[in-house]
Length: 265
Image (cartoon, rainbow, N blue to C red; front, side):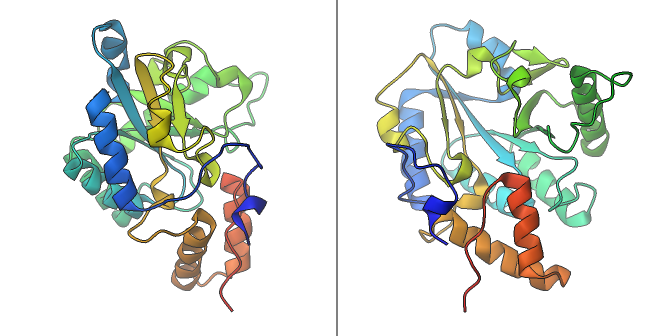
């Protein structure tokens, strides 16, 4: 399936190189222009107007093992970043031995682990139940129990308007979708850089603070389009779980609004 069936036909969007080699160059460009900071430290970083700051964020929708590999490479590139994990992902269980090992590896390298709050999975909030903010707080509490440490930041999976460009903190944690962190924002969401090739985007600044979001599932040693890389992941998962590729692809498409390529003949 061609990539254009997965993403909007956005003029200027870029999806030409998905290799770790490209990322190493991108990270070098970030370090030449900014001081990296963890999202949980955003309050202090935003107050220091003498420094250009970049917050590197990763939303882990699908695969913690790839996230752990990505985190090891980041350290060699000189950056500590923020990994937001889900407590209700249909593709990993934070309480499993494998997931625990991956998260422990990420934390041991000095990266921050926060909450990736799934708006769709937790959208059934009744009129007499918790508010959205209370539900976010409850989800953070659950993650804190799993991690055994405080959760300092949160991002939103498939966010709704009420969660976009709000105050710096929600439920007592830094929001990745706060107005102060969204004035200059670059992302590889849905397998494309919406604003064009990201290194070139650095030369079109929109402030002294940049937030950049990357999903580890798209990246690898070889240059493969995201739908092809996702296909390989699902083929492996189909064998591991004895589930049909088609069923997994439908579940994945519902989860991240992105469809894997057709299986190889």
